[in-house]
Amino acid sequence: MAISYNKLWKLLVDRKMSKADLRRAAGIAPNTMTRLRRDEEVTLTVLNKICTTLNVDIGDVMEFVDELSI
Image 1 (cartoon, helix red, strand yellow):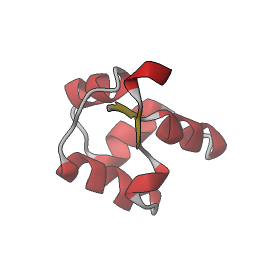
Image 2 (cartoon, rainbow, N blue to C red; image 1 turned 180 degrees about the vertical axis):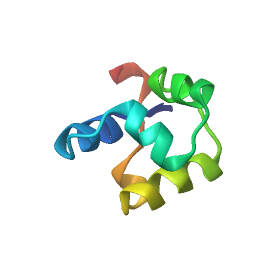
Image 3 (cartoon, helix red, strand yellow; image 1 turned 90 degrees about the horizontal axis):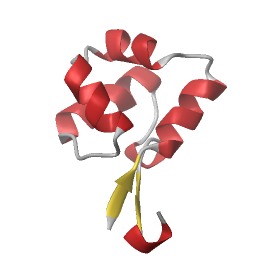
């Protein structure tokens, strides 16, 4: 299984918010944003910051996908 943050990027587009805006608002380090863009694992602390900032649930920003469908 692989991680996909496509839901997060779609949510940002819907809210007219840039990735840089999210990074600043949630207090996320630039290298962590790079990991998110690459669909790499990040800590639950980071995901909590994102969810709290956007007032959403974790399932609204990420999902596990079958690696064969990537």
